[in-house]
Amino acid sequence: MAGLGIESFPLWTLGWAMLSLIGISVGTVYQKRHGANVNLVAGTFIQYSAASVFFAIGAFALETREVVWDIQLQLSMAWLVFRGIDRCHSIAHAADSSGCGVAGGQSVLFGAAGHRAASLLVVR
Image (tube, rainbow, N blue to C red; front, side):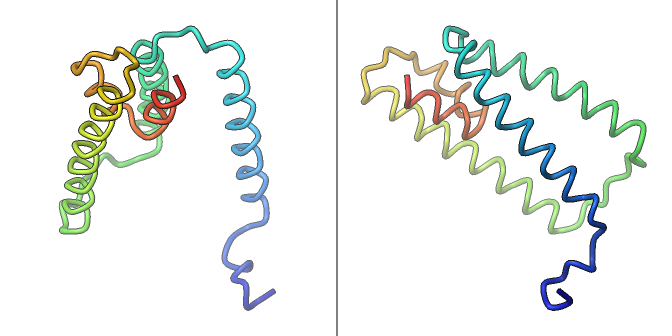
């Protein structure tokens, strides 16, 4: 197993990965069953707010809160901004052409919410 690089991380990390996979799967099934009638913008806002609180607690407890503004970080952040703008335009175009009755202003919010919101918009 030396050629696979398995010795480079502890085996218990696979347990955390499996727990994460199970959590994501259960959450997806639960959301499909019980969250079908939730407004997409409101639901996304609530979900992101709850996640932000959870991760802020972890960040303040475990991180140094120092940022090294090197070129890799700056390019990564620029990529996220430009990719978000591209998604906003793509989703706005899909909403306008599919006849789903979504206003243009809401489409921008869907694009900012990310890929998951885009896939939900297409399904509806």
